[in-house]
Length: 392
Ligand code: DCP
Ligand code: MG
Ligand code: MN
Image (cartoon, rainbow, N blue to C red):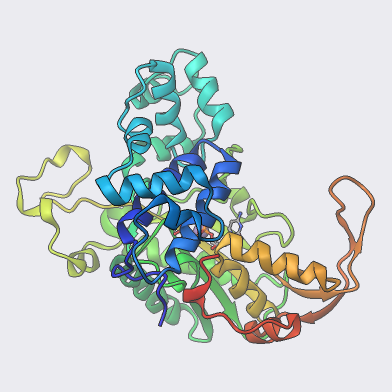
């Protein structure tokens, strides 16, 4: 049983508020604070008693003075003033506020956001009305039009429904293909930022194109089944702000295995969406202006990733794609301490590293294990960690 993801965690409220601060620092690319918050949250998740005072917090690993004070503030007031300050549009500087707004657009980083504010744009409408001047990419346009969808975390039961749908359609395309949900869902999260699908099939090899063909067919069918004929508005492998065409859709932002990763959006078909929960607004009078159907179905765009994995690499891919990223970093560090190298394709030994600043690998080394996730832990000499216990 994991303490990490349940709502009856004694520090649930504190974690939730710190998580919002973390989201803010992630959006503003404040790497140092992002790291500090992640470590503190991870520590809190492992506590079995409520942490109420700053001295109590300070005695725990990876929590410094300032974070300890914040924990006490949350425990005593159920709020964090700093969070109110940064999120409730409390900045009175319109440029600051616009920058924050633009950073919330999916795939937009600080340079782009600042570029727009320096051109005088302040609202999402400003951008949509000046697509040329703002040099909006198709993905940015989608990110603006679906701003709130793509900034809303997906409840676990909806991830399950989405996964069942995708797995079911996948079975009809090719029953021998396996689709596994990784990411935060596999770690047991109550909500996820996106849905991470790992797609594999026995006997597939890197670059043989079989899984690419499968995914093309799968996406076409999902698109056909989805709500309102706009089921799939894909970001076409294009999360880094590069201009994209359909031709580029297989070039994932992750270099290495070309064409192994696909980023996109999916919309649940109406009849499945209706089974998840009684949608609150739908009984109300629907406004057909914003793309709802006459019956009031309001399609929600959800982020999904597909990772195509040759069968010999499944274990390493599961490990990588389950995360979280801090846990991955510690596993890679462990591998390198043992003279090995771990990446999403496998565990290697005897890897040769170049002398340059990035110390890129000259040779990948000899593969030790890739297929079996448990074996990778074994070879690294560490005990197996259930996905639910990989929050750091
Ligand atoms: N990953 C990583 N390093 C990165 C990005 C991702 O190691 N820079 C790995 C670990 C993540 C996994 O890929 O757990 C999936 O990436 P996501 O961004 O989808 O993150 P999660 O699924 O963990 O969280 P979320 O609920 O926000 O999607
Ligand atoms: Mg994810
Ligand atoms: Mn993802």
